Amino acid sequence: MRVRRTVFRGVRYGLASALIGAALSAQQNIPTPAVPIDPVPAILDAFRLHEVVALGDAHGNQQARTFLKSLVRDPRFASTVNDIVVEFGNTRYQNLVDRYVNGASVPPDSLRQVWQNTTVANEIPVDEEFFQVVRAINATLPRARRLRVLLGDPPIDWAEVHDRADHYRWLAMRDSYPAALIQVEVLAKRRRALLVYGQLHFQRLNVMSNLDMQDWRMQTIVSLLERAGPTRVFTIWNVDDALYLGPRSAMKDVPLSTSVCSDPRYIEERLRRIALTAYRRPKRTG
Image (tube, rainbow, N blue to C red):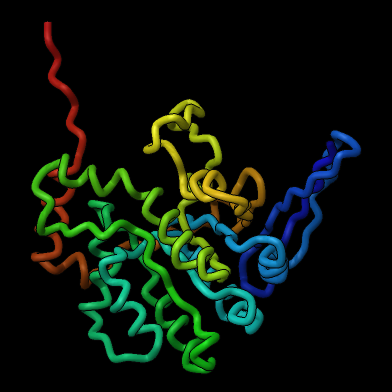
């Protein structure tokens, strides 16, 4: 069996981008060297044979943010892709996001609830500009071709979370819920979606369970989608197909904004969530 790997570089985006694509042939078992090519057309080309293309999100990384917006802004993207499924959004606010990306007036404080109220107790910095980019693109498109941002995080209501058990029942659905969402809103409607999630959600065999997938909670978004039917997901990360954003020394993390961190109500609620969901070290006996 022959494995062919290809490297994609995106110099024009101000970052070193590389996508390693694996194509199998039944002839030999000798891998060929990676070859640099442009990542955007390569990713879009993957949609010719796949309804879902999964792009690993390096949470809070500036280079990853820049590339994602460059990909979405490319004129070919909206003519190829229908939906963008994101990890950084509570699906309880789907109607609000639908309205916003289609041009409706939505107060900034209301929009921030989308990513501030996910199942993650300690908020991961989110690129608010991403939603603005989709909104701007949709303003130039006919309604039938507008992009939809699908919020993949389970619809947790933090007002109803009072202990770890309350939190865990939602946390346990962080893969099964978006997998079901994609089946209903993307695959059943014969649409194509870019899945933007942390790459551990792309595992076909979960390393956290020592590759044992019998427990449904150990299934990932990709494993669930592929077990449910003929769908094969094209995954882009650092094992099969990888987006190289540059050397580790050049990576830049984006902190939460000063205005958010100076809001006492925000800090009080965030500390409450961390306290009730954090695992505590068990007491020693004997």
